Length: 499
Image (cartoon, rainbow, N blue to C red; front, side, top):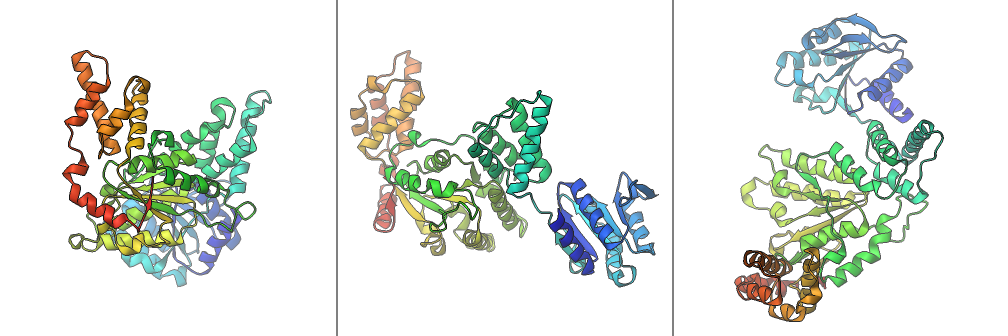
């Protein structure tokens, strides 16, 4: 709390008339402002449309004046002779499209040298009017660090212990450290609520609590469909082939999951940045992206580029910045950029939005410190700008080709097992041989079609049913033979084969 108090005091001593604080922790912000007022020997008043004006820096709050109307409170501040700090809680709806209120606030700010008033605009979100920008500054309330989060968790554990006749909360140091790491980026109140939920459920902090905690954390920081939390992350046992990619990820798992502090982090090894998965449609790129998160045991976030774009100028870039900030808040995590070429191809018809989006993404990729591992998937490398695919942006570019015969056999086995069928009862070798040129998705669909046929006929599944579906399918490798050949030609010598 003290660094925040000092920062706020510096802003007030610097004679900034309007200070904007965006936070969901209004009580904590008011306490911070009260402390600053005491240090500066200035009275502190708060206003809300329901409570009017109150003096809040004394032992007992005092109603100064029942001024509940926004225009009236602004006139009250303007007319006040004694210098003070005025906190306007959630006044933002009464400034949008209200030129009279904006003008009053500007007049208060312009008269700062005479009245010495400081107006704090406190809200969960605040967009300042252009005519007020030069008189304002933004103040960010700091989030709890690891030490504070650990203290918070132990406080909640002590409360549970007291309520349960002195029983101790069951956990271990490794899981406790992971819990604290997953609480990073949360406010004090939200972190306390999540920690309490994990502890009070069963009096224990276990690895099974972490996925639910991450889901709850994401919902608190939600992005309205732009960024989605993928709850079902596959394990690599569900992915046929990709042995080179699997081995590459295994070597980097420990480094990515290291606790991010100077005492334990291996500074000799760079933090893994991400990979680009290039390949044919249905080849398993999306499943591999999910499997990375499952393999590393971290949340998977998927950025939906179609929801990212907004018709208003600047909104698309803001959506991207907020999505990336949220990914950092949920770190360590995997951020999946599906079909990335659709967002950064730089088409002329979007008024430069794609180029601005690419610039913002590249800047973040170069400057990010949080452990956010990017998995970008693409079907068309020709539409990706060179500055995105060059070495250094991503750790590696993997080419996911059509599965070979042995991999197709594994894929049949995986999908049969998932659907409750014993793979040993079918001739997998014949199925794998006959499905030459099939992608993983096409192999799965042949099995699905065979199962529907068996249901309609009232028959048990056998090899013949699947063989018939394979024979009646024209795979993408046949339908799109020329583009696939061009893609393979480009990938040769430029990428690493994922299998």
